[in-house]
Length: 78
Image 1 (cartoon, rainbow, N blue to C red):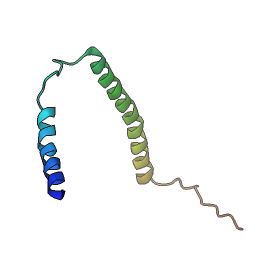
Image 2: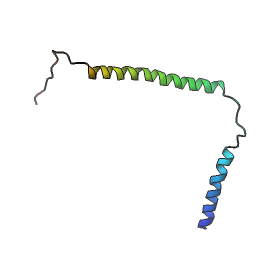
Image 3: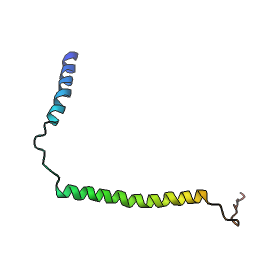
Image 4: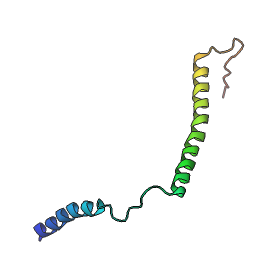
């Protein structure tokens, strides 16, 4: 029984990718909606990347510039 189940699983493991790779029924070219959707996703990435760069460079500027002379740290006593 165990060898039968193993044989079935191995056979399915070989047959399913072969059926999936047949290429039957695949549309030729890309539809306009797909192109618009991918363009929309690209715009989202770009518009999130720009503020990220601004924050990154402002962090670098804050790390590598000297603190003002009159700045001091206050400690609260509890």
